[in-house]
Amino acid sequence: MHEEEIKSVVDALLKARHVAVLTGSGISAESGIPTFRGADGLWKKFRAEELATPEAFRKRPQLVWEWYAYRRQIISSAGPNPGHFALAEMQRWFPQFTLITQNVDGLHQAAGSEGVLELHGNIFIDRCASCGREESVMGRPIQMSGPPKCSCGGLIRPGVVWFGESLPAGVLEKAMAAARSAEVFFSIGTSALVYPAAALPEMAGESGAMVVEINPETTPLSGRVDVSLRASAASVLPKIVEKYKTVTSA
Ligand code: OAD
Image (cartoon, rainbow, N blue to C red):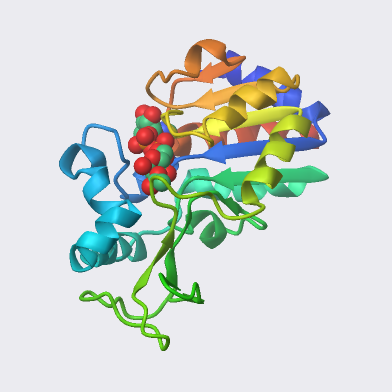
C-alpha cells in the first residue's frame, strides 16, 4: 500500500537539508486522544465558544477549568504512538528539522522530539489570567476542581491558545520561516481549517517545498499537495522511516 507515494517522499527526503512538519490532533488519535472535528471529535459533543474562549473562562471559570482537567486526565494516561516516534527519529537525519504542532498534549516531546514549536500552547501549563505567571504541572496530580488562585489573587487557566487569542510570541514567526525554507513539508493529522496554522503548508508550497499530506480523510489542502498519503500517521510514518533507512544503509 502507498509504495509509490512513499518512494517519492523518500527520494525527496534523501536530497533535503531542511524538513518541516505540521501536526494536528490526528497524529495523537492512535494514542487514544480524541480529535476535534472527526466522528468522535470534541467539537461534535461540546461547543468551542463555551469552553475554549477567554469570554467562556470569564463567565464560567469552573466549567472551563473542569473541561481542561478532564482533557488533562485523558492525555496523561496516553503515550506517544509509532507516528510520534517516527518523527523523533527523522529529526536526526537532517541538518535542520522543524516540528510545528497544533497539539497541546506534549506527546512529541515524550517521544523524544526536540525544539517542538507548540503553536497552541501546552495543556500542562498553568497560567495566571491576571499576572501571566506560568508554571508547568506536568507529572503532578491533576487538580480536578478549580480554577485555583495565583498568589496575586488572579485565576489560574490552562496555558493553551483559545479562539480569539494570539499565538505565543515568536512561535508563529519561527514556524513561518521554517515553512518558507523547508524543502519537504509534511501536514499530518490536521483538518487544515484553523488559521494561521493552516496557512503554513500553503506557504511552504509557494516557496517550492514538496508538500506531503498524511491523513485518512481529504481536507481543503488535499487538492493542492504534491503527495497525498491517505493513511493513518501511525501506520505510514514508520514505513517512511523504514524505507529511508533501507535506502541509506544500502
Ligand atoms: P481536527 O479535529 O480539526 O482534525 C483532525 C484531522 O486528523 C482530521 O482531518 C482527521 O481526518 C485526521 N486524522 C484522524 N485520525 C488520524 C490518524 N490516525 N492519522 C492521521 N490523521 C488522522 O484537529 P486539528 O486540525 O488539530 O485549536 O485542529 C486544529 C485546531 O482546532 C486545534 O489545535 C484546536 C482545535 O480547535 C485550539 O484549541 C485553539
